[in-house]
Amino acid sequence: MEDRQFRNAMGKFATGVNVIATEVDGEVYGMTANAFMSVSLDPKLIVISIGNHAKMLERIRQSGRFSVNVLSCEQQEESMIFAGQKQVEDKFEFERLGDTPVVENALCQLSCEVYNEHTEGDHVLFIGKVNDLVLEEGDPLIFNCGKYRRLEALEEAASK
Ligand code: FAD
Ligand code: NAD
Image 1: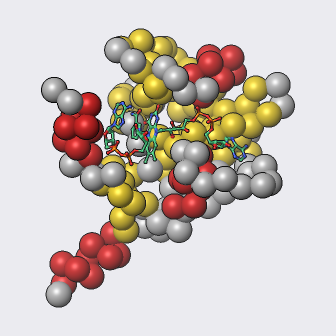
Image 2 (image 1 turned 120 degrees about the vertical axis):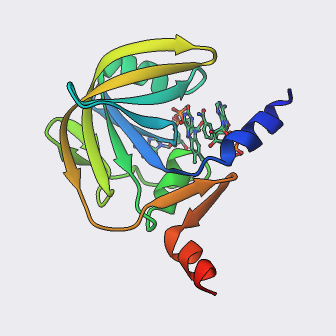
């Protein structure tokens, strides 16, 4: 099976878009990720999946913690910045949730410590224990079939 065919298949599954952030030696780094799932209520666990070529992999291993920031439909630019699709001159300004860097105005900020990791194929699954969270009102940014989408536009199209 071709990689493209597999990616096209996976792209049929619409997701939100997250920025994963972590801090190593006083430097904060972000990475766009849509591979994310809730895992357990007791304890509160989530999972993210990081490709083995991503710099974020060793950064999370070094720091032992990370945040998951669920982007709003106003934050496509942040998604593009942290996927390397848009270059910016200035360092992105993160805010803090306790000790953890988080993205301002994200719909949800989760502060996590690494609970476990599993290497599976060419990705590493990090299980995160959620220690704190902040919620905001708003609509999510959607990723589907390799494109960013907005709920509002989909609802408008459906009402015509
Ligand atoms: P880098 O290449 O160092 O960082 C990524 C980009 O963020 C760079 O352009 C960098 O300049 C910028 N950046 C980082 N920190 C800062 C900062 N403090 N200030 C300003 N800019 C900064 N990959 C996965 O492994 N798993 C996924 O689930 C996943 N989902 C994705 C979903 C979508 C919708 C998209 C578009 C991409 C996804 N990717 C995923 C791919 C991943 O986002 C890219 O491969 C990313 O470039 C890998 O980043 P890196 O960790 O290697 O770090
Ligand atoms: P795309 O058509 O490549 O993505 C569609 C879907 O395929 C994604 O939502 C994801 O579920 C899956 N996918 C894509 N690349 C993957 C990978 N390397 N490993 C596992 N699953 C993958 O969308 P696009 O706009 O071409 O993506 C932009 C870039 O972001 C590409 O380089 C892509 O590889 C990367 N990306 C990586 C992941 C991931 O590693 N889990 C997820 C999404 C996008």
